[in-house]
Length: 390
Image (cartoon, one colour):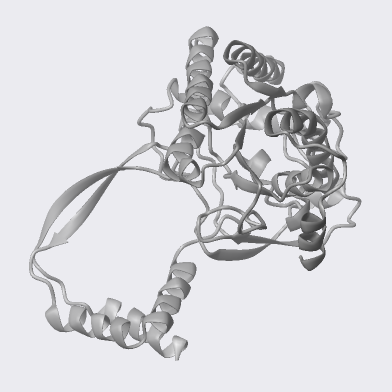
């Protein structure tokens, strides 16, 4: 039945007659998240498999819940402690095993040490910078009323600011679609096709659940997922010409974005946590250096300078954390810059994600016990029962 409704929807869409149209421009703020209620099975890159000594499976599952969080996130319907992790691909951990991604794993580890049910939400999204996360915080995190939000951004902010000079630059954004304000040119149908519209409404009213499932399948067919979409060089327009930027001015923009995050959280009685970003920039491999040389040809942007800028941005995170009195987890200083922890410059392996989850747990545990009056080192009977049930 679902298949028949899906075919009907696609056929009706293709047979819809052209009507008199007028161009319409609509502006909106882009919410960069994974497609809600979706599931993807994709191939891990060879460099990831090599970092795991080829012990990991070649394919990885990415499931997304109805609110756009990477699963498993909402483990408990009524949690005692809810922590949301915001960030880019290093928080997303796409190629890491589903239950090993550190936002989820940190929640499970904290639950073992606290007498509380803990949810760890993964709202990482490849390409997101801190201003994207600020919009996500406003649009979908605040309504959850979490106890704590952990933010990790560095390299994506450095790149967008270095290349374009601003979070709001109007560069050609047709590839990864990172722009914040979206202008959409569409054709407004002056004369609707009543039979077409009426028949779709009839299908929806007669088979509401099946029709919704058919539309979900249609979106999955017509919309590429994070793992199946073809990645291209979004910075191509900036290649092969000298790069010019003012690092101090860019640092100020980054600091303001981090400060906005902290003050927004505090306004809504949420504890903000800032994390620096781990990387292997201080001990790059020959392959990393060769790839960088190819990608930055003609830009006068040596790898050593990039690493200095990245470390400078991590220092900005430390400074903002100190000024805002926000809790800081310094991953740059704690994660060893080795291949077993990161399979490329910044992205975690399974082992690296487990290490990060343990690091977060070790640092948040005393903070949480102090602020939320948790005590003891073992889970309560209720939590133990929930863990067994799951």
